[in-house]
Length: 189
Ligand code: HEC
Image 1 (spheres, rainbow, N blue to C red):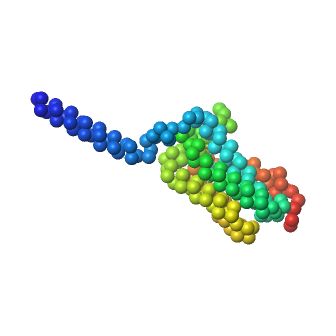
Image 2 (image 1 turned 120 degrees about the horizontal axis):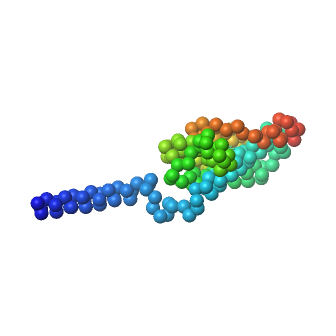
Image 3 (image 1 turned 60 degrees about the vertical axis):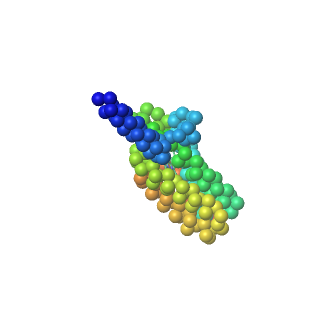
């Protein structure tokens, strides 16, 4: 009896050590340096504001490329660089505890509900990789002159749409086009 219980204790202890070892290597188990000091609601607002600003900046780039706003190489570069930085920050504003979009959350508090779909948490690796890729594309385009930047900005547009199709609830946007774009007078036809 005695020997058996010692054996059981040893096996349990060995399992615990083994399990501890596995957990320590698992990136999904947060270590203290991965735990945020801000509440999830603040992170949610920040990521929505970031994405909204990325969207407005992106609209301005397209207005310039389409000739509705005057071309300004310095502004074009600065906006892309800012977008790249915002895109780098964006995935860092998600918490391990899911708070995906639901019709109820939207109805209760439209500005305080996340637009993110559950897929963000289900396929975090892909989501994070797509965010990194988009920020790299933004920085890459920021280093180019107008002619070379154009195809990169178009490629970026496809990256926005592809990520939204997988990870964001469909959204009726209020495009800047409403204020300038085709409704405005082209600065340089
Ligand atoms: C890696 C995925 C990803 C990429 C790339 C991406 N987005 Fe988003 N976007 C999201 C997600 C997810 C949300 C919802 C965020 C939330 O509410 O948590 C969102 C939200 C938005 C919103 C709504 C903001 C709001 O809350 O009112 C706009 C506008 C937007 N994105 C524009 C863009 C544009 C423009 C690009 C490309 C230049 C882009 N996004 C690239 C994932 C992405």
